[in-house]
Length: 421
Image: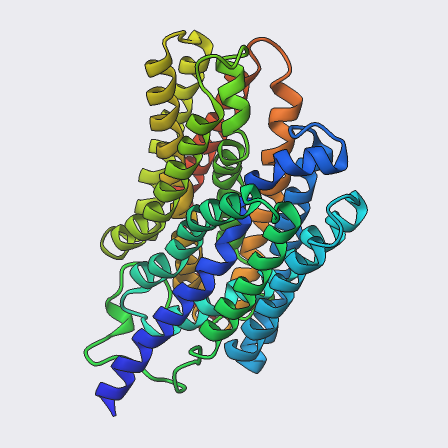
C-alpha cells in the first residue's frame, strides 16, 4: 500500500504541473497587446489595453478564496476541472470579440480570471498535502509550470498570430481549446491523501518551518503572521509584476528612437525573464525546505531589493551602447523574475507551515489576495511615476524600498502559538 501511495503522489505532482503549464499562459498577455491595439484602437501601453490583464489577475486572486474553500469541501478534482473549462472558455469567447473592448474585459479579464482562480489553488493544495516533508520542492515544481507556461505559450501564440489566414482571433480560439484539454486532463490526477496519512519516517514535530496544527480561516485571520504574509506577498509581487508588464516599455525608455533595442530583442528578454521566473519557483522552494521559509524569504527579499536599486542606477544612466542595453536589461529583468517566482513557492508552503494543510485551500486563497492587490499596484505605479524623464528610476526606487519593507517583515514573522496558549 505504501509503494502505491508513493507512486500515486508523484502522479498528483505531474498533474499539478500540467495544470499550471496551461494556466501560466496568462503571463503571455504581452503578445496580444500589439494586435489588440490595432483592433481596439488604443495605444498598446494604455491602461485600456493593459487593464484587461490587470482585471484578469485581480479576479484571479479574489476567486482563489472561494475556490480554496470549495476544493477543501468538494476535493480538488472537480474544482480544477471546472476551472480549466472556464479559463479556456474565456479565451474562446475572446476570439469572437477582438474589436469590442467591453467584451474583451468580460471574456479574457473576468471569465478567464475566474477560471484561473478555480484552477490554480487546487493542484497546489493537493501536492502539498501529499508531500508534508518536501512542501517547498513540490510546490516549486508545480508552480514552475506556471512560469514555463508563459514562455511556451508566448512562442505558440506569436506563431499563430503571424500565420496567414489565422491571426489574433484564431490565437485566442486555439489556445483556449488547448488550455481546456491540458487543465481538465491534469485535474483528473488530483486527489487528497487519506486523513492522517503521513509518509514513512515523517515526524511533523521535527520540521523547522512552523506549527503542525490546523487552523481554519476564522482562526487564521486573528494572528499577526497572516497579515505579515499578506503584506510581504503584496510588496514583493508588486516589484515582479511591474517588471513583467514593462519590459517593452523599459526598452523604449532606454532607447526612445527604437534604433538599438528592436522588437525581437525585447521579446527575447521577456522570454528569458519567463524562464527565470519558472526557475525561481523551483529553486527558492527547494532552498526553503533546508533553510526554513522565513529565512529563505529574508534572503530573497534582500536580493530583490538590491537588484531593484541596481536597476534604478542602470535606467538613470541610460547607456547608449546596444550590447550594454540588451545585456543589462536582460540580467536585471531575469534577476527580478527569479526572485518574483519564489513568491509562488514560498507563500503557499509558509501558509501550510503556519496554519496547517487541512484548510490550506481557503487559507492560502486569503493570503493570495495580496497578489491581487499587487496586480493593481504593479500597473498603477509605472503609470503614476514613469511619465517624467527619470520616471523609471523613481519606479525602481519605490519597489526596491517595498522589497526592503518585506525583508523587515520576514525578520519579525513568527509561527502562531498553539491553540489554547
